[in-house]
Image (cartoon, rainbow, N blue to C red; front, side, top):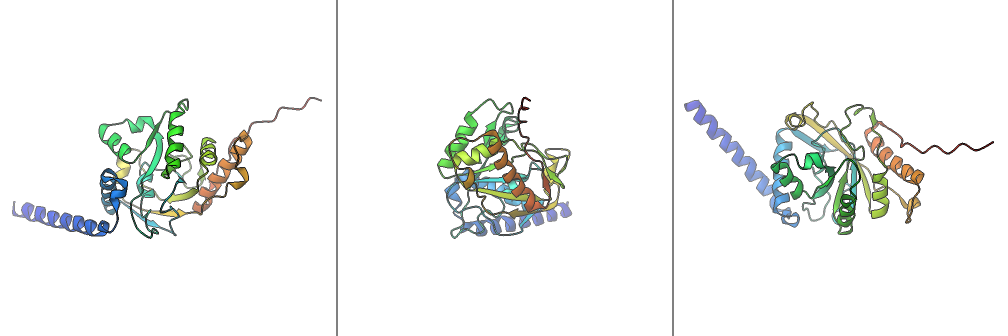
Length: 264
């Protein structure tokens, strides 16, 4: 009993020190700009990274201090959104939290009341996999027009087939959204994200993850109001290649429509 009491007191002291340290660290970060719900989510994410998914930045973070941007990254773990939030304010002149709202599959968004609360706090946008609902895309465009950050995983699903060698093929919707929004597109590669056969267990796998940021992509050659399917495929390949190059791996080129055979 005495050992149990001593252990409990030690745990309480350690927890108190951790909380005090976090409070002191984030006192200078004006988290209220993102709202108290986002602030709570960041505290949870910070504790999670401290205990499990330790993450470092390989180079200078390119997420802007203000204004809209689309952040695109490889996708090998459900923990990826948490990792991308790591140190996002490291280069800000006045550090503060910026929410990165993600487009995510509706079945995960609606999985439970707790997950839905977190997703709403983080301004995530649920999307039906059938691709028939255009409202999520309209909402994403509106968010960008309002100067917010949008996070996309162009592979559209977890890459369990070739995470260390090649990105999965992406849908051209990422190119259409990037061109239509006309905002900076920032590629990021996530190295060694925690993986598991279980969607829940991977959050408790100890890892040392790394983030490598790329410069904003130059999409000026495709600026306009209408794009052919081949043009969208070209932009999609540019986006995917930029991510793959940061990780030193390959990417799967976007499928093109075959030209009709000419009559002889």
